[in-house]
Length: 116
Image 1 (cartoon, one colour):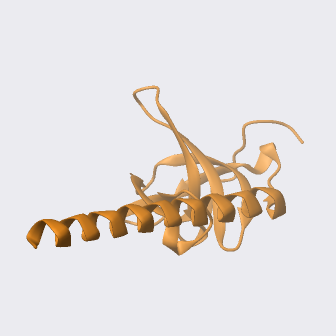
Image 2 (cartoon, one colour):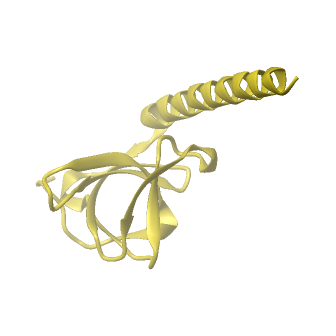
Image 3 (tube, helix red, strand yellow):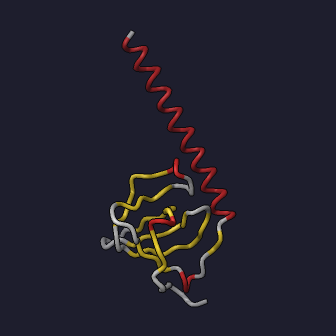
């Protein structure tokens, strides 16, 4: 009986996780198409909130990932959509992280990466 319950629980969690992945993929696709583009000369932002600022796989509260950056880290923003920005972070180790971030966690720093 315990094995049957475990199998049912496992199956339901896998299906639920898969459905959430599809949900976030759809939300990301919509966000990518409908977002307002940010000029490269205005793309510089800084994390303005203390604590962890999480990346989201889509511009939706349900799509939070485990990746985060912290206060005063600099990022480049490419798009804005529904109180989220699509950003890229260049880590000190050379790695990059991209995703959506809540607009309330960041602010423009007056710098950009290009001319417009």
